[in-house]
Length: 194
Image (cartoon, rainbow, N blue to C red; front, side):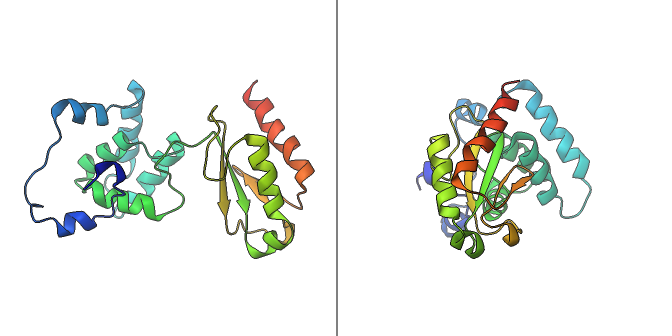
């Protein structure tokens, strides 16, 4: 198994002939993997876990709150959660990788969702996407170097009457033209620099 390519699907664990043997990483590697980026991060995750600890089906709300706080699911937070809930990390990764509301990689401050559903597609959303990629200097699925924007493609944002449409965080923009994209992005860049 190549641990760098692991998605947490659990297939290898089910097929492994030595799955009942405890496999611990070297102590230094375990400490490095479990190190939070900031000293306060562990306290934030502990507080989120405690908020839902006694509720049935608490995994999803905990993951949602962790994802909301960090804008992604850092591995140390998932390991912390695994230990506190006594749930295998592979099971947590299976849930986290199933829902598109979660990200296992760092995301920007502003998540841009460009709708490529049928209504938006026929009204020109591929041109909107192309203009966003040009303006931001990233392809969809990527995050700008300054961690300000993450560009994602979705199949529906629930406003077909406004096609072509995109969403930046909680803000929805409809009946877009490629010429409007730059002004929208600039407005978010300006507020970030204040």
